[in-house]
Image (cartoon, rainbow over all chains, first blue to last red; front, top):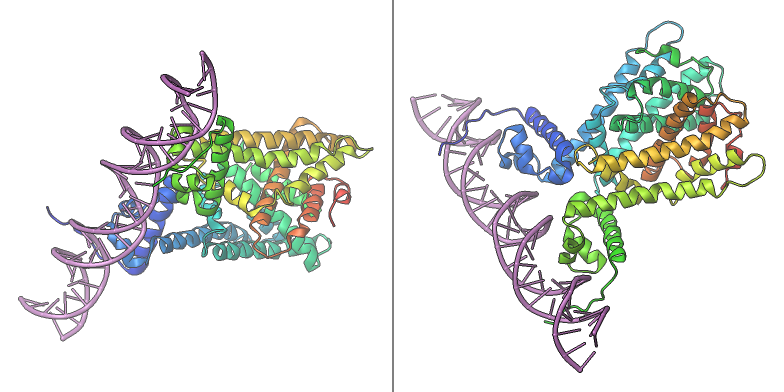
Length: 220
Length: 220
DNA sequence: CTGATTGTTATACGATTGAATAACAAATGA
DNA sequence: TCATTTGTTATTCAATCGTATAACAATCAG
């Protein structure tokens, strides 16, 4: 019986490999089926190695959850920010891109929403989870507020902080809900229509003239 | 060692007791921690009895999921329907009640959203789950459409089936998202404000005059 | 080339799991 | 009252879990 050969890797790479393997396994088998042995198999290492990097399975899973929330926000945020320095309607475009990015792949993803829901289901009971959720939600909400403010300003709408926050909350609900149901893809409607639906609804929530956001939609 | 005394119950009652105990345990410990022993303890029966009513743990959990979706839709639907036979603005009131019911207790509930998310996380992988979700979502969407249609008609808005469905999808996203984030109650805003936020946003999505829905809000 | 370090593998252990089986007792009909 | 049925309990079992520990080998300093 010969021992398996191996390579030593840096701590950063190992930890990320293990975290990503954890997400893959959780997606397939749930938090229940995500055993350390399956994760180790998926990462191509022995089970014992996990405890060398994470003091317990719980710590590994918590790290995976934090890693996931980062994935979810960074994509959409990038879409919005890289549309920044355009011509006159720059704020409108940035907000449109952000909304659209949230209801189109890669953000619109069955595997991502499955993972997200699996962790959300544990937020209330598992001690460490609620902070992770709260932080990621606050980041999302604040980003949304900074995107909304200049749009309201550009169209002469009321833009006091209170109004701005209320509309950010509503818009966040809209985006979350459409992202969720669209990702689950129950087949009751074509998800290609989601960007148009989301942008049109957002115009209504913000009381903007029709087309303000939806005419900046990229895909058909 | 004396044997525990027991009473024989009808199949209906036993099954419901076991299903409700399952939901309680899943809420507390997740799908992972919901062992047949814990469920049996919570229901006050022996572990073996579960297999007398459900051929496997999987079947028990699936039954619990179907039971939960029924709980979630029935409450809000009732709120809307019992507001039916009012004066002139009846459709507006019914829709307002429905929206409000979805973002206030008992529908706005951390335990319910935890349960819901836990099951949603398994919809993609677990064979029997997707049908349960699809059905409950379609019911919700259709109910929303029947509530929206007369409201649009009463205010002279376009009300062709296509428009109606699009707005139902958007409104459903809004309600789902606000219900979700509100139930998780991260403390970033007061959930008492949710009804006003939801109703105001819904007016925007449906392009109704300000106050059309929000002035029918029950609570302050 | 050599020895020390430690990342990594391999094995082992107690606890817990879902499920199967055996033993019992509550309800039922005659 | 008594035999019968079967809902229910109690016990058992193999499998698998998270974790602990020991053995090994890749890497690096000198």
